Amino acid sequence: MKLTDEQKQIIEYEENQVIEAGAGCGKSSTLIQKALAFPNLKKVYFSFTSASVKDMKKRAYDSGVKNIEIITFHGLAHTKFIKSGQYKLGYNPNVYGISKEFGLKQDNLSNKIVHHAIKWFELFCNSDLETIEDLKYIETIESEKAKKFVEHQLENIKRMTIDIWDRMDKKKLDCSHSFYLKKYQLTHPTLNYDLILVDESQDLNPVQLDIIKGLKGVKVIVGDSNQQIYSWRGAVNALKSFPDYKVFTLTESFRFTQEIADLGLKALSFKEVYDSEFDFSKVKLIGSAKFTPQTKIKTKAILSRSNISILEYLFNYLDRYESIYIEGGIESLINTQSGIKITDLIYLQSGEIDKIENFFVKKFPSIEKLQEYYEDLDDMSIDGMLKFVNRYKKQILFQLVKINEKLTEKQFASITFSTLHKSKGTEFDEVEILGNFEQDWFPHSSPNTKEIDHPEGGKMSVELEDFEIKKLKNQMCEELHLRYVGVTRAKYKLLHNWEWLNDSTEEEINEMEQIKKEVLS
Image 1 (cartoon, rainbow, N blue to C red):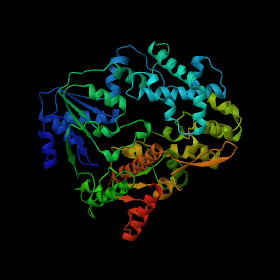
Image 2 (tube, rainbow, N blue to C red; image 1 turned 90 degrees about the horizontal axis):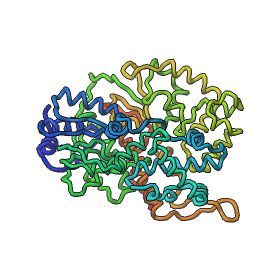
Image 3 (spheres, rainbow, N blue to C red; image 1 turned 45 degrees about the vertical axis):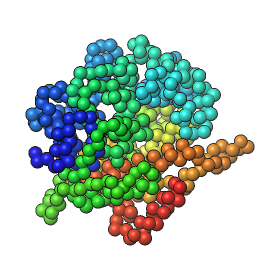
Image 4 (cartoon, helix red, strand yellow; image 1 turned 120 degrees about the horizontal axis):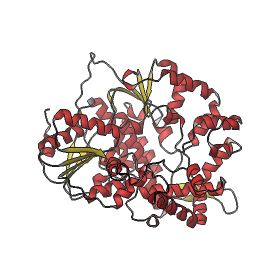
């Protein structure tokens, strides 16, 4: 392998370092070469998913890397607590399961308390805090209605949160993945590695970051700050957590053409509007791949912001494709984050209660009441699915059969469907991204105000506090990161309906930037 000057500098440096690597700039290859350069050192490589671990193990083996362990953070903790038999792995906590375990009534009050207790439990498990009480749960609630409920029931919610943890800890309740990783972090492990390689560091959560900080040995922290897309589930950018480390960059992409690189940079250029610390002039991305008339387009993908958008697209355009592959499986499209199947929502909508499998869903008299319940919880994860069911009704059942008939393995599919989040780490010759950038991704009204309940009834507008505006700006940055991720999955061709990525005039660009500044000034 011929190394670039940037890669040579990284490999030759023998102390702690941070590597800011642009999309497709060969960070995995660089880490392989880094490991090869120090054959006698005991090494560990942390990756995010089992799939990436499998891929990296093969690449390391093929390259002749020795004396290295390639693992996920959960894999490390799993060995200590699950494989050893200290704990038995069960399910991730859900309202129905916890209510049944605790012998609670299936009423709205109990369900809401359980919902918040589970949320508190998960937030704690993903934090670097020592105790559940250290987490100020009420500060994580956005909805005013939900916040009032939590304030009133705070002690009950806290007691249940602690009880969930204690039952898992005392083996009265099978533990979850988040529990045993948190348990591992609380042991403050100090592992015997000489060289610690950490990939995708922009998306570490506080638990994972704390584990890394506690390890001895030379650390190589690798990632791309502009691909941070998981802060909504507690991820932090570890690249900024080691200010004393020497910073290196990888700017030459081996994945895509310069045209794709330019489109990726254009997506990031808007980030300056929302992040005062972001200096676009320092961002570099060079596309090295070549596209000629002889280049064959072998792999295609359609990417979307959400699972429901993919499902809606397949409802309308399935006949275009002979075979399809869905990243995450069809289950990812038809199950909500709350674990509710779309079929149960269909039967609830049609009033066929006897056909509903989920006991939690079955207790609601209508789909409208179920929607009200989730709105009260400040949980909109089910909202898109409910709207989809109300629109298509029982047609969904017939279309799902047709979709299932065209499913095949990825290598045999004429096209892959994936969300932008799931697409990270992948590449395709041709990529199409669904959705209108302006309409689907940015607020339609000023985010400087919010609607709250009026004391005398109805709604009223109040000014957002500084921390709320900051949070919103961070969300906008992450949306741009997601767009950047989507653009840079393409090697040769990118299809989209974003006017702002076309050859806009200087006047049009200035107008768009001015709008954004007015919205978030």
